[in-house]
Length: 241
Image: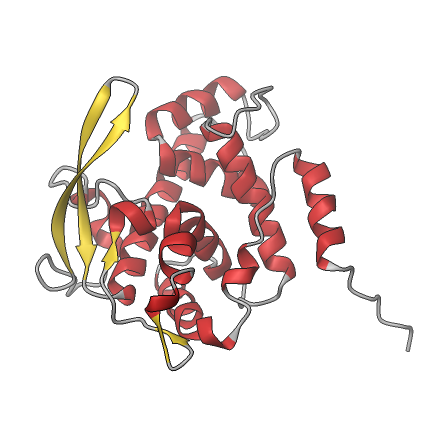
């Protein structure tokens, strides 16, 4: 038998990804590589399987939207050295699903939720406001009873956006995207369906390096960062896929 190739140090791999994607690479694996975080990892694994998403990708998006900083990073959320999964989860602050409580939006992703998933049982509508260029915008988000309900919610929204991406590229007559391209465009649709569809159409294909934008405030750069950070998360070998 030949020698097994030695795994590169994490920082070396991180630097390679930084050079490959030309964006900042976040170390989201640090939020899931300890036994104290295992209860959360198991929920992501189980929920992702129900909607045919990769658990690592679902975790990557959730952490990038606030689940890392505002949940996993909060020491008060741990008990007996384990993350508590029975705490309330705030859709607006911790998961980035700002419009989950909208009567207009909810029916669009409802089919990806458990059949017994109901308002007042799994979540309550919570009203927030966010700052936009045109001023404050009303946000009908949701507060979830526990981590399971919250992750089921973001998984349903993300799966719906993936469906929107697939529908769009088939209408445009494109072939099949690579894994990176699917990850990028699904996240772009997650952030802004209208803009994502327009850019995908104008792009003439799936190329994710089509823009010279550099600001981290743009969806393009955020989407590239999510792809690069996901690749780095996979290097930790925490999730099943």
